[in-house]
Length: 516
Image (cartoon, rainbow, N blue to C red):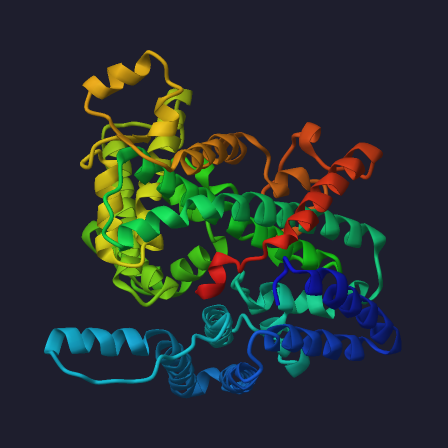
């Protein structure tokens, strides 16, 4: 079931909320059980058989985590063994479903063998509920997970706003909220704020992301088929996908936060205008924030972080981002995407060290420096997204070559005929004019020109809803001019936004992060 579907908006969500509050009047425990049951129904809508996998994962990790937490410090070796065993089992299950086919395929190519296994269907959300529970086991070993109520734990894992595509949750940040009695009583303010954020997210997804999607896919398809791609077409496809992914993931994050806040539960912030980042480190503090937190806390720091010398620091960065790339998908294109970001981070950290060595204040930068930092960061992120999106390495390289001008510049005839005196001048400069494709070319760059100012200049949903702080770890904002308040102007604006999102449901599509 998708957040951007009529079934969810008009049937599932109203029934979930009405039954939740009616059940909570009987007893809070009944309300909790209903939330768990509804979340499982939400998950089962995709493929009921994988509810067994989800249930087994919850039972196993709760038992292991409870056992770890109840061993005294005297029995620290048993705690360590259980932790390693629990993490190993989680990763083994994840690896089987996500990487078995990839592993066998590469073994066959390398050793010229013919091993075969049936294509394994990836269970929806397995990466997210696996990482969430690995974090729980580590927190239990550290003594940070203190509550072991099985119903609360089941809700922590299955809670439907985060189950399919994140955020990756921490036990300690959610359990106190599930114990809070106020969430079991209907609050009109919470519902209104949550619905507003949901409407913003729905509009981003169905209008912006799904609107530009048709102009990204054809370029990557052409590259995978070996077609020659021109300079403008390459940039058009890459920027279209960059914007599609931005609004797709941003829209999902807003919808998840809004759905949760309808009952007064705050999810951690997971997306914060990442294309406004002035360097690659800041980008990763803004993009998929909870995954970045997980990679930092449970991979980078345990490997030594920056505490074991500069060389080791760069190795740790590369290894962490390599694993981050592999987490996103079983393919060499994802590995290269992760390694590119590891390389970017290493370059940035090295540059910071050089600036410090020569006495520059790395905490301050000029407006010109900020501008060029944002532009450079955006460029390298777009370049990496090509490998993230392309189905093959050859297709990714073909698009990169096109963007570097190695295939020349081509313009559809239909566009060229409207260029007047520029037309013959372009011909003398080697520009190629091709038949057809004028409408697609025009629409691609119309969408790009329309959406780029929004990502760089418009306030994000956290800034709009700054007075209510509907997400955990949300930055403070003090711009009252852009802040939502309960008045007729904002009400009318959001009514149009919600209506626009609903009217665009005629072209439903899955969220891109569902595949991870």
